[in-house]
Length: 374
Picture 1 (cartoon, helix red, strand yellow):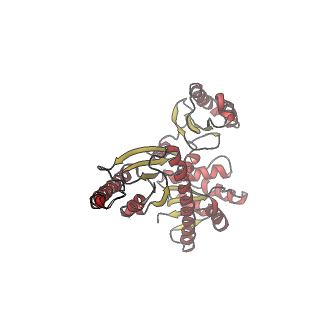
Picture 2: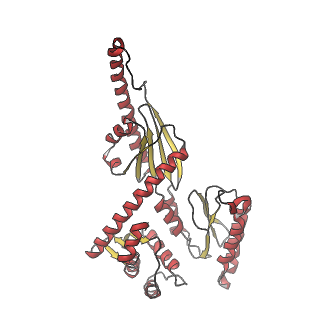
Picture 3: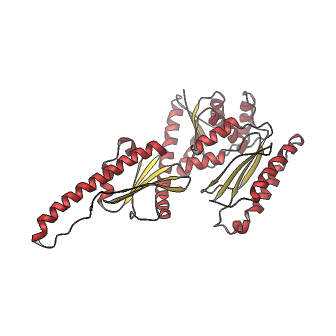
């Protein structure tokens, strides 16, 4: 089950009447403040802040959720960079996961699980595949939420090294050996291409990076199926025996570059669709109206999205007029969370854009818009 599927199930099945305590806690052991369980200080502060403003009739449920979280943290061993923990007002753990990506520490007590940081992390750190190859060996990886996993390894059936002839007497024999070696190398790369297609069926990755040294990478690129070509982000130079952390570091940089380009193209298509008044809208009010009717296919918003007081007042009116009242507070965070939850519940996708794409969306669409189903 993918993280997106888990989050959608969390949203659709855990609207607890007693409330949910959502905790995102930095536990990165490379941060000095988190060493020797130093993250516990932040954890306690988060619980105190989350409890501010809890209504009297919710106090008992909130306390049960807090006790649940404290009991979990008493035995917790830090792993990765961020702990995500959701506890219900019934005192049960609804969901927990360690992520290898940084998320700001925060905690909220509300009717539903606070999922926006999870959705944004999944959007930024989408699954991609990496193939590191030479003429004789290939290693296949998948990367998701900054965590790398080696899936398979392929070896050629025969010695496929390049031959250097030093004497005329051996030239003809070595030419024959070279032709055989080249043929085995082609078979090896064809096998790798087939393995990549099978991996695409199993892992459903969004993008692909090829890595290696020499002609093998270019030869493999030519053998990609059409669907893999559509996901191809380019090639980088890496030895086939490179350690996993080196593979992750180099390919992550390429993935980030690609993500920024894709986001800029996405925003431009959204602006065009909105101008034609067909399959897109821009602005908070228009987007909320489409969410209320379940028409949003993909919600798009800038990383630094911030609604002004006038827009928030109008948003409150739209949400209160829907069949599901909006949040008690009138803030950008609460409105955005309400909107994301509605989109996820209706089966839509979430896209947070950064960099140049965010600036463009802020300038031409108030930082928010959506592609519509109809």
